[in-house]
Structure formats: C-alpha cells, structure tokens
Length: 207
Image (cartoon, rainbow, N blue to C red; front, top):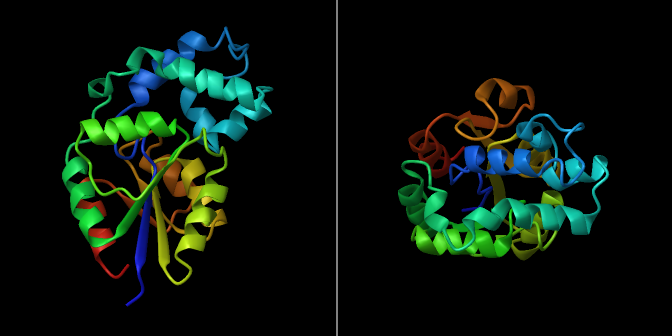
C-alpha cells in the first residue's frame, strides 16, 4: 500500500485567523508603504503570500518584519487564534494514521506554539515562512524524504492550490478559510471540501 503524506496549511485551514490578521495587516499598510497598492488582505493569497509582497516592492527582510509585526498582538497568546470546530480532533486522528506536516507562510515558532496550546499532537514538522518563502520548495523537500509516497496538500487559498500543483501534490481545498468555494473552484483543485467531516472522509478514502 502506498504511504500517504498529508501536508496542511495552517491559517485558514486549521485555525480561524483571517479576521485578526487582516485587521492587523490593514493597520500596518501605511508603515510598509502598501496602503495604495493593496486594498484587500485576501488578494495577497491569490499566489504565494511572500511573492505577492515582493511584487509590491518589499524585500525579504521587510516581509519577515511585516509578518512579525502582524503577530505582535498575539505573541504568547495562542488562545486568541482558535481552531475551526472539529479540526483538533481531526488532526489528532490523522497523525495516528499518516505522516502529517504543516507548510505555512506564518512563522514556524508561532505555529508550534499554537499546536502545543491546542494539543494538536504528532505533527512531523512545521516549515514556516522564516525557513523558506516558497511553499513549492518546502513541499518538494518533504517529497525527497518519502520518495515512494503519495502527497496531498490541504489549504484554503488559490495560492495554496497553485503551489500544491506545481510541487506535484494532490491539491485539496477547504472552503471555510480565506478564499470562498467560488474563488477556489476557479483555481481547479483536485478536490474541494466544505466541512472538516468531509475532509476527514476524503483523506481516509482511497481518493
């Protein structure tokens, strides 16, 4: 039987962070000279988050500074960013059945703190934006560790779908995050699910 490797995005997929991060980003736009260029936080996720900011003139050090500034009100307060209903249980079952990774644009330490606080156990590794901006490169690095496995990336944005496909993963989109089902459908993921229960059934099936 072929081993199944599950790789999850975090924000908008496992935890409900959009409102908090969008408000913080909008407050920081002027400081980072983005106020006239970016009107909608969601638009940054139509491709890779960091690449979207590079296209707006931010350098890699400034992107990391922005991400850290977005996080400042939440540092040491993981309870402020809560998981979607059913996701903690789902993740803790999946990690007993498959190897599960997290690949995210957020900071590795932030995600590890959240995983610990919400008692999501068994994640193999978190690969954050501070390790590498490109999700494609991070996804491919996981492939090299498991050369004979089947790979799925589960995310909530158009950018997630595009990067999953570019890395050769099956792209599974969830409709409860940053981008709606209608928007996600245009990116042509391999699967779209609307509830954690439907996601669980899909991932436990033969696809």
